[in-house]
Length: 521
Image 1 (cartoon, helix red, strand yellow):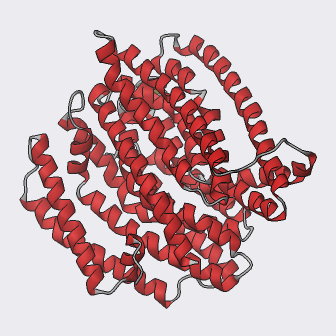
Image 2 (image 1 turned 180 degrees about the horizontal axis):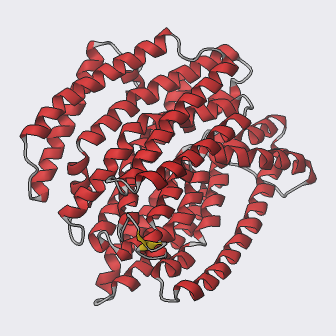
């Protein structure tokens, strides 16, 4: 049981790490090309809608609805499982393709109100076709997961990142004198090209795995209805962080879409707020995507298989909670303590100034402390879905989205400004963790046994030691002016933090260290 969890988690972690590293490279290139300003705001606005679907479907929500039903049909007979996959793919192509066409029409109408030269609307019209493509990749990825192939889906985002990097770097070389608006439009087009490549990559992986989809048949209609009935609550339950992030983006995009005032009052956020929020989100999503979502993705098939074996189910769940806390807590604390150097090293240069670094780092400080909660929510929600509880996560999620919106609209008027959006998301994530754990504990019995509590206390102690080691460095060493100096400072901070954490883990004989490394102890 546990070996399967850790082996799958390592596969997803390694490939997700490659995806996130190329994602950081993408952001590094974009920040230097467009900085924090109207052009980057427009691109961030255009990428918000298709990216929301990528996050909702690509990071587990659609898989959570489809995977258990497909797995059950596969045990009953390969043909019915193939029919289900074919019917779902056909339905998605039809519905999402139609929505894309409708969206393009709506954008044409919207352009009449905001002006046909509105860069954000033009770019959104370019990127919208990415939406059905990425959802198709998610369905194929869910099929591959049932067949034990986690790699292709985890690696697919690399194609998106590389496509954006290549076009961002190559366009000015191929077309000298390129305007910023045309440049960013070409980058937006590269998103759709990447979507086509992702679909081709996923279908090829499906063929290599020997999976037969078959023609849609009547035997799959009832299972398809079951998937669709479960999909909406699962999307709401697993997607609360993504929905909150989307709300953050909408509120931050107000100056770009409408203007600098609301009801005659100066809006507290200005141009560049959306780009700032986007950069900060990608920085905190690196450890979240590499570790938290990787564990949750790997654990779900095990939980679904053990749903009728309460003891094994709870054992797997407790192990997952220990692992995400062991990784998430120090990741959040470390990111908070190195927020300025990490932002400068990855993003600063070209059109991205030191003032932009300070602005993004200030927002990052709001997101970072709750990385453990973001990670744990993915595990807890999948635990509830594995035992058939879809209503609980939805009720909790709806409440959290409402609370997040209320906090957003309150905190942006404080000196926090756009950082208030980050703190709102973090507060809601912690509260959601408490409510999900309580709900799951009521269904399975106590989750927090002595082993889990001892693990969390030791993890907190190790994290505190890391903070104690890094705080003197932060207080005594002035921030370097040069990029090389900032990179050297970051390297020293990471070495000290990682060294202290590993040493403390060894001293306390924490098995989670070996679980994370994949060693047998």
